Amino acid sequence: VTLSPTMASSQLLLFVIVGKNEPLYEAEFHKMGGTSSGTSDSVTRQNYFVLHSALDLVDKASWTTNNMYLKVVDKINHQQVSTFLTAGNIKFMLLHGGKTEDSIKNFFNEVYELYVKLSMNPFYKYDTPITSKFFDTRVRAVARRYLS
Image (cartoon, rainbow, N blue to C red; front, top):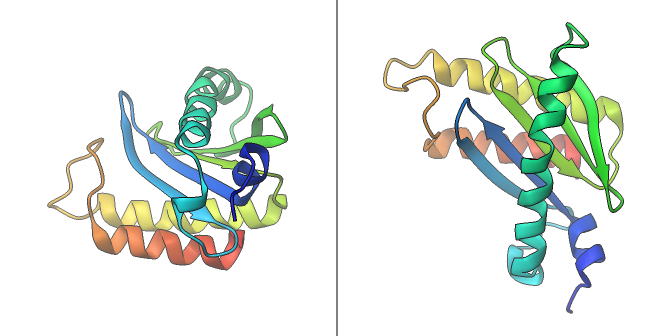
């Protein structure tokens, strides 16, 4: 089955943790438990572009509220970018096709808890790419629980 770009992008959830200068962690989640074989490379690049272009909107929104959860900061082509901003200005960004606000907030809160535990690890240097397989496994489990 070949998915059209709009159908493929609505099936795909893209989660990125962005530090001060670079992405620290990236993960793609598929609603039906599939792999990325059905998603074209151009759709994947477009999704990363949408998240990257929303960074300015995140910076703008961060000055208007004291909340860590910034909700939906951008909407493009039936997709939404939801953002969670940590106290250290690390951005958790999720590109999705319209999930419930409670499920996204719960997802961000649990991933934040995992990130705090990771940052307390003496072997992890702050604001560097996250390479921990344990962290990746736990984030994917949280995504299955709240986003599928």
